[in-house]
Image (cartoon, rainbow, N blue to C red; front, top):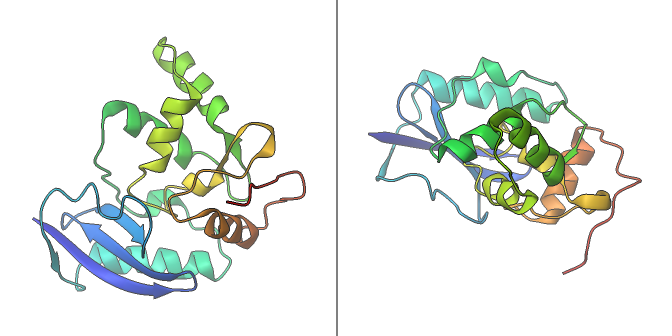
Length: 174
């Protein structure tokens, strides 16, 4: 059984999803792939302890703190490859970025299998726990600020919030 609650944040409403013990989803209102990994109906229940922990984490994050990802039990649904990519995302420090290609090289080194930046991009784009699993910290080659399910503008806002130096990056205007 899956549960959900909605929380208003400085970037708009987010929906949190839980199996009752861990966070299975965090989606920003109107983001691409919204609730795609929720394979069953989510029942409204704001009284879960894990939701309280996640909301506290988000409140501290938006207040400028740097809460640790390990403070919240996470259980994102996805293939083993996607889970491996999301694990790498969790290791990206606040205000730092990495590229899809760098993640592909890291996964290739760990698995011994050739991994493409495009495949990594697909996994990053389908991250079901936005913000907490920091997919906004991944950029394209040569500093291209691209590829965020919540939109490039929101990606920039989150990186600016974390005080990332964006002076060397660029974004396409779509």
